[in-house]
Image 1 (tube, one colour):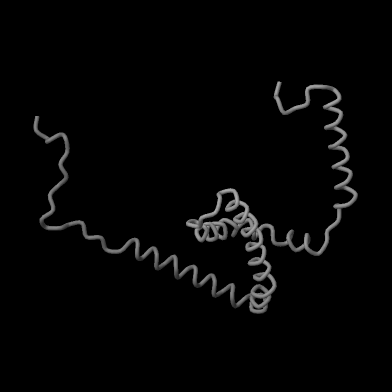
Image 2 (tube, rainbow, N blue to C red):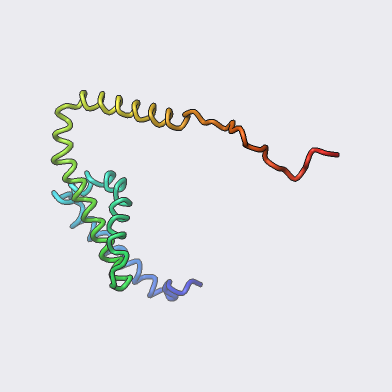
Length: 147
């Protein structure tokens, strides 16, 4: 049997009782949404999108520091969580409120810019590729073509 599970009926009863107490405690005392938890809930999807970028930036700054790895991990975890939520809160409170005033104008500018970028990248990728150099030899293969 798996070693971390309780081996006796008393041990199993202790785990079940602890689980019951924890579920009821969380249900009674933490089953409400305050200001902070509401803000974190509103930020959650956007934080999910940007947290890897924030994590990478913070990790690069900590790359050559002389501190233990476990401490680096702890600092990286806490600072990524805090920085991601602060960035998204700032975006939602300051930038998004200014953008929503001119919503239609910005939407048209975004679509126009996206189409221009796609057109430019397509044109750059499909430019004139001259593969007919006069002194270019055909590739050699293992088969010379002679029987």
